[in-house]
Amino acid sequence: MSIIKPTIGRKVWFWPNGSHIGPPLAAQPECFDHSQAMDATVVCVWGDYMVNLLVVDHGGSTWPVRSVAMRQTDAKKPQGMYCEWMPYQTAQAKKVEELPLSASGATIEQEIQAKGLTAPRVTLDDIKANIASEHYFTAEEGIQGALAKRRTDLGVENQALSLLTFCVLTLRNGFTVTGESACASPENFNAEIGRKIAHANAVQKIFPLMGYTLKERLYQATQPAQSPEQLA
Image (cartoon, rainbow, N blue to C red; front, top):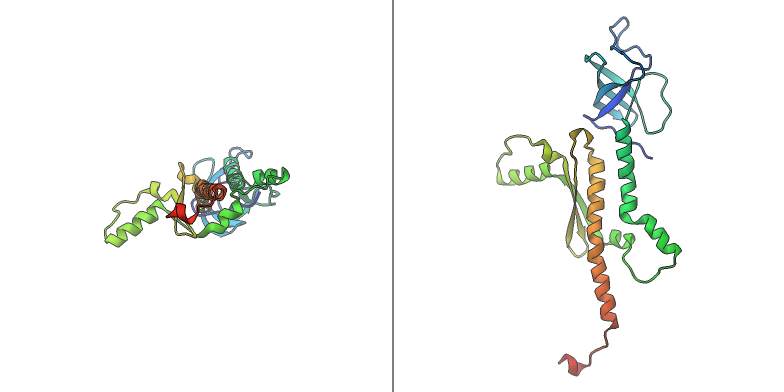
């Protein structure tokens, strides 16, 4: 499984792991049970493996902690303090990572090839070749753009709109299809994951369109040629 990119505002588990936090002799976060992690929020991202956190200890006090090692997926536990993704986050990321594979039919494609089913059909490569461009935006960005064009104001921030991601695929003939990805819990929102799901949903809409076009072409090929008199 590939890494999960940390973003500002996401929740993680923080493990002090015996490390002293802050300057010498400074008070330390309360830890009632060393088998339980502390709640933490990412406040700055230095990279995929290093972040700044706002930690809430077991007593409810908050602690800013800088340069915390980010343990990714199944990597070994660092020597000192570190943070890691919660189990449901890694499970969700794994499902999304597998989604393009199942949604694209890659495993089914392997079975089709193994069975020698070589008659004309629509493949994922056909669909990829038919996509001229792709665009992504959230509902919030779309509404803000529309309001800016009309020179009006949204008024109040609507968090729900920022959790709905759209993918617009433009095909070679100019036709467009869309895919959507909605997120119920704001804490789970990840822009990259939302785009992947929206893209996979948009691709699914292309299959029946190209399937119909192929079927029509095959049907026309079976019809007897008409004479000039019949066409008159």
